[in-house]
Amino acid sequence: GENVEQHPSTLSVQEGDSAVIKCTYSDSASNYFPWYKQELGKRPQLIIDIRSNVGEKKDQRIAVTLNKTAKHFSLHITETQPEDSAVYFCAASPGFQKLVFGTGTRLLVSP
Amino acid sequence: GAGVSQSPRYKVAKRGQDVALRCDPISGHVSLFWYQQALGQGPEFLTYFQNEAQLDKSGLPSDRFFAERPEGSVSTLKIQRTQQEDSAVYLCASSPGTGASYEQYFGPGTRLTVT
Image (tube, rainbow over all chains, first blue to last red; front, side, top):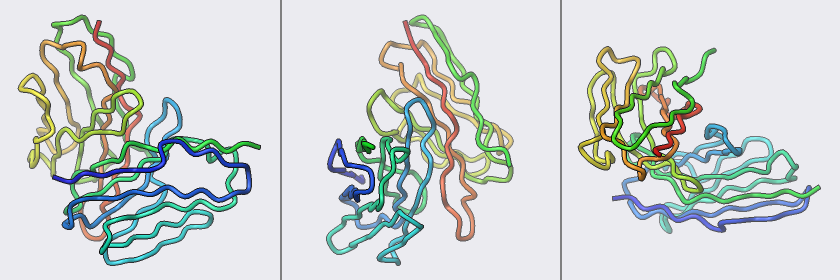
């Protein structure tokens, strides 16, 4: 089955810096890759996603890139703000069904 | 519009008790998923419904776990004879599941504590 690895586990940046979180997946059949932001005690919130027929997608300060050959995808956050502080999860889905999540990255943005 | 809702938000059960967790998906969403999230971990898949049909239950950890969605809308996850290792947040997600839209939207979760 699918296995998703996520790095780093924690990431501390200064406000205004960029943050990059990387994930790798194992199942070449995976074709959908969402990213979720989860604040403490809250539900995971979908922030951006990408499908396997697209190499890059951007939404304001957030972008995701996908390299199907290498089986890795990354989340890029520019001009970070303190409210970006949260745990971020990547996920992979074979066939647009169940999501297999990474282990999470705790992002701390210091003012 | 209304998002995914779950009840109860918190449940404390004594070991050996049965519990039932409810999920109300976004209206019209075809697909419904249950995940288990242990403290400090990512959500782990339990089971998946398309309308009333349970298409994948490969993530259910034991036969003490049972899920249903009899009318293709509300779903219930039941855990029989709860054990301490069942303590976790149980998340429900729904998805349009058709056409070009497969995003999964999560509910707030039910935090289950087994004492």
